[in-house]
Length: 207
Image 1: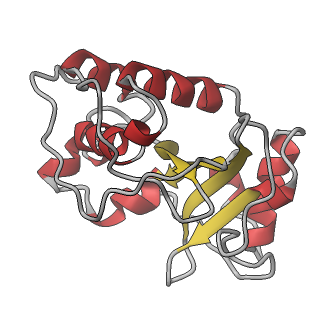
Image 2: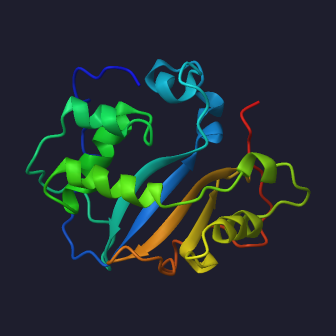
């Protein structure tokens, strides 16, 4: 990972919203699809430039939920440090992404960025990630198959707690895992369940 001399500046893109937290979503982005049009973009060189190898599923963020929408842009009591950004970049391979996720979502969960990033590391580290490169080669691939393969690799995860997000062209974009307030797998709320199981799907391998 590159040396980080400063934390990128992040500007809020919406209103501050404090609300009681009822659960969480861990969003895992499929990096080959994200990088498909960004390989030459200096802003995404760490993740997409190839100098650090190829990424599969990477953490987009950990988002608190509430009955009144996503809590966001809360007042941060502690500032993120360059060392904390660098330490997170194997899971979140963009300094700007780390800074934004802390400022927008983590600040509404905990008082210290170190705690937010530690929770992400624990949750992601406890997952078994399916071989989506191999699964991408299957005929008749659907969102349901992508969801089922994740549940098969992680017996504690029911398919109802796994949302598969496809982009408008039908390619895998993200897998979103729904947690209860106590960080146990929980059914995804209505409207956050992703593509229907029968939806045709494709997985870009980065070739």
